Image 1 (cartoon, helix red, strand yellow):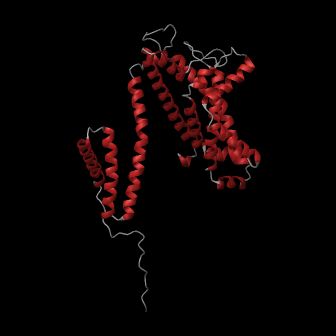
Image 2 (cartoon, one colour):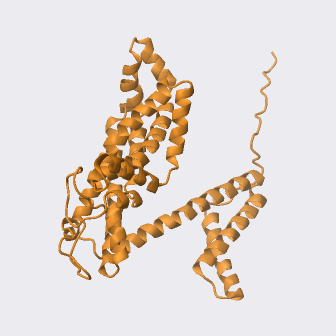
Image 3 (tube, helix red, strand yellow):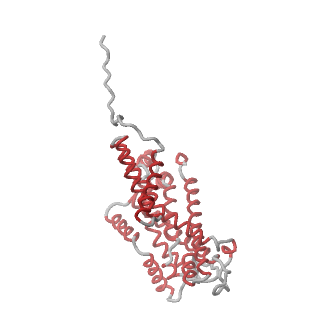
Length: 353
């Protein structure tokens, strides 16, 4: 009886080389920073940025060369790619972290509960009193109105493009959405200003003007984000629903939208974050007042971006109020994003939670 011949396993990865220990990466990073500091001390006065940049270059080159000698070219290429990706991430993180730290350190001095619950009525010159209650209310009311206008339009348009749109009409809508995505914010403000001037007269100012301007900026973002989320829903889910005799409109509501609920809510919140800090269209349409105005259709309304701009422009104690208003705006956006996460988890399918 002949023995079965078992073929030898094929090695896809060269294992003849060794492996660098786990502590090699932090040690290489520390050594690169030390060498960079010494070189800059020899050449002249070192700076923190110079040491970091030169150290990063020395670290990438040194670790790649060492890995190539010890581990081979494949793992060396992998380490180089990992180093470049990590470096790009840290580089992109620098302006974000510096901005947040700057706003927090400058705005925390004037940020308080009294600052959030008082307005600017009777505050003049270098007075330290006054707060942003009127601007906070105006921002929330106008942004909510813009979302009420843009979200249904954007959601229905995205559903049409994904589920029904075929032919020249769908291509024309897609082209117009692409054009609207890149329009400057001041153009949206001018459109709202011209529209209400023609209808209501040149003296008309109200929060609804700002809401319409922001809705023009929100709508293309909502359409694009919702469209991408709907395209990610597998066609097998739609076909399974059709096989059970469910009509298309009910399949879209019960299956497609429920499956993509988390991504849709995230896209809507991105569009809100896109417009909540806009200054130019609101400065042109709603202006600025010193008291709280809840009426969206009558009178000027204050908003946080315009308030921060005007206060910084006035100088003195207004600069402190401007930084505190900027900090409040960041906290509002953060709270809205946390709320969106909770809503998306609530409406997502059970298997996706």
